[in-house]
Length: 197
Length: 309
Image (cartoon, rainbow over all chains, first blue to last red; front, side):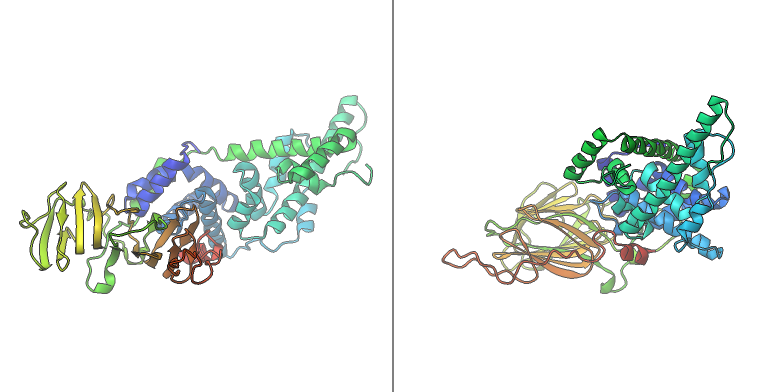
């Protein structure tokens, strides 16, 4: 995000929009464009299409802003619209929503890269191979610091399910980091690379 | 690792900072004594760090101005349709009595309009007018004009009606009615009602308008609701939109669908009229306090949001 709004300023802007001042919506769009684009971008790879969907998200938010609870946080509310609009688009394109998937199958499909990468590159590679909803799950938790309750609301999943999925994937990724450490130690010692997969 | 070691889920809960304090201390105590678990924790911590760095950086993408401009161009213009039937009115009324005992003060903080009647119109036509109380006209529906009043109210001037008088004031597309020996004045965009009854029918742009009564300030934001204040408390009737309520005892409630709610003199919410305190000081109220079940949609439930779009 390139603009920050404190809570009071945000509430004033939202109240302004509700009372008919459409221009008060612009700072909200500018502030939260990054959040929306990050979520939409996980579902939709084409940048032009993703941009269109981002615009649809804000238009939907504007139309339904009268339903927004003033005491609530705006970002989870907006994030949910972003997820819904993205999934709507995928359903229109006749692509699965990936709500129902076999996590074991997914995890078994993530293989540690051959090249020794740093932790972050390793994470990025592994994350990119996950279904969109799981990528968004990580985005909400680690990028936006959403609580599990917020995440459950955004993704329309029980908190228990979210925790279960996230914990298992993290454990899987953590194991990759440990294995990469093994590679590094072997390489630095000049010994032969052992099969650690 | 021993059987007492911390399992992977617990380590993650610890790093997520979602463990209760007592469990957190137990984990920390074990970590202090177990190098294996400390190693496991460290590996998870590295993963968390990588995830945080990667995903937070992905949020830093700035907006493209043409995209933002496109959103703003496509916004529906917030225009209230001219009323063709009484059903189209947004009606906002305050009914107050002068002799108010120490009642529960209901602060109406926010009300939100149901935008079902706001339609898209040509974005090239600005139909939002400036709302001003100064531009008003007065009509005595019943009784005589107060002394000194000709055809319009003046800002800052106090006015008092007789018991049987009924005065209608037109402001732009809106209409106010004062009765029941109302004492009132106005300044800028605020009407002060010291006693009596007042009804407000607001149409079109009225941003910034508010009414100050004896112990409550009401700021309408397109919501349609009524307040009735009596000895036993306050009745809030929501017709349209959304209201957030806070009583003098700090209890809060959000209502977002047509309903009626009562606030007793004890500052509690009730489903029906609370009984007035008995002569002997018994504070027993009629009917149990309203349940704490929030009305649907109060907390942005999925159903509410999905219904919205």
